[in-house]
Amino acid sequence: MTVVALIPARYASSRFPGKPLAIIGGKPMIRLVYERSLAIPGVDSVHVATDSEAIAGAVRAFGGRVIMTSGNHPSGTDRLAEAARALGLGAGDVVLNVQGDQPALNPGHPALLAGALAADPGLSMATLAVPMADPAEAMDPNHVKVVFGEDGMALYFSRAPIPWPRDGGPGAYFKHVGLYGYRAGFLAEFVGWPRGRLEALESLEQLRALERGVGIKVLLAAGLSPEVDVPADVAKAEAALASGI
Figure 1 (cartoon, one colour):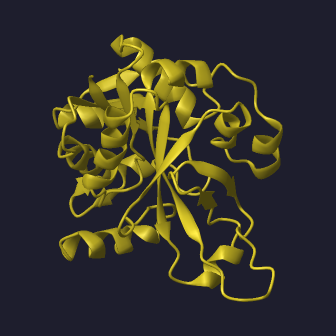
Figure 2: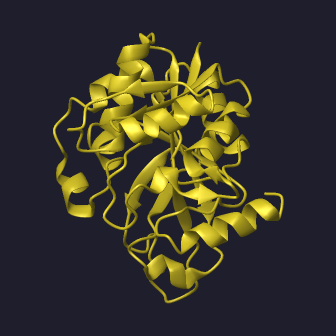
């Protein structure tokens, strides 16, 4: 089983144009993510998937691997699938979707996903969650919640606070973390399916799999890597890196 970490990266961003090239701690953010991805236990190779020559040039400059992809992809997952095809991965190989906005990525987190897929040949997809320390966060639709069964398989993802405590007691919520592991064969199928009804309602791509009866394993992780969404987040990422995260 080959394990490949792919980092989808695009230059255009409404909130932070050129984000992958933002300098954090003296390095472009895409380089920090790439270097962290190289440290994922068991990973065989790391590649940046992009349609931007500027990003590609920056990656090549530090010796990284690049796969040029179409500029017409509706999502990072579609870009990921094209890159996986270009690599000629087998159906049972594992693709780790590493977000390009986590310069302080914990390499152990994507390793959890690869481990789950290695342990269960019938598993197609895995993702992460962390307990929500502040229940008030559950009311924020920008924080996606997930509920899962005793077997760790996802029951539902939602922007709404789920599960809802009927009797008014405190809720116990888990925040979905947008790192994914896929079988390469499943990834190719997934991007060919039309958008699902629930996916369209919640604007959550992972619901496409649940709507089609595909199980998603949810692994619990400790702590969150800070994400860089807007220029103001650069200082937070630099502080996290300086603290030794």
